Image 1: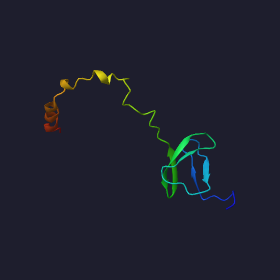
Image 2: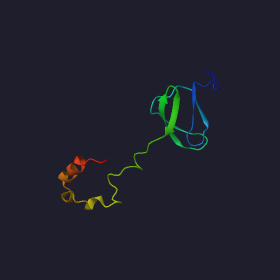
Image 3: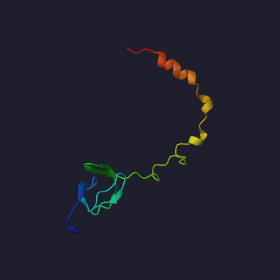
Image 4: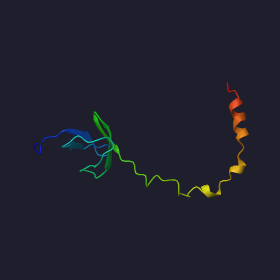
Length: 91
């Protein structure tokens, strides 16, 4: 296959550059846009569609104490209070 042949192509959601592929990418493959450098993920293969790659590191809330979750007191909440709300009928 000659280098100029393209198997498939998709647009970068960041800069709208048409990204060409020499072979068919698989679902969840990661690619980098050659124009803007954005890391993208193949989210659909037919037709080919790219979206911003999900980064687990940036969205990991498990060890983030920004909201003071360590001070949360489960004893303050009573599940029965929620049941009362569900029984109300709103017009």
